[in-house]
Length: 123
Image (cartoon, rainbow, N blue to C red; front, side):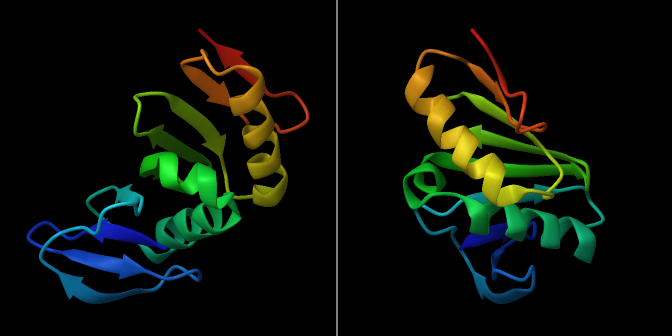
């Protein structure tokens, strides 16, 4: 469902945040998970929960999932837009809100669903 850059190769990431396999090249269409140099398990679990919650159409638009901390997840879309996700808490709700925001505000450059009850966009 996603890949993790290991430096000289890539690992695949499953829905529970476990990495497996080695790939010389990242497969097209899968989000790249970026975590700090200490790719700890908690960061990978956060990333997996976020990606698993995304609608397939939205997931295909995601270039990278950047996990700065477990409460600071950022999605970078392939067209340069960003989504401030926050933590993986309420991931299903955030995914639904994001899908609505992408349709309602297609020209926005930044989407913030970190508080899904009060989402925002910026030009």
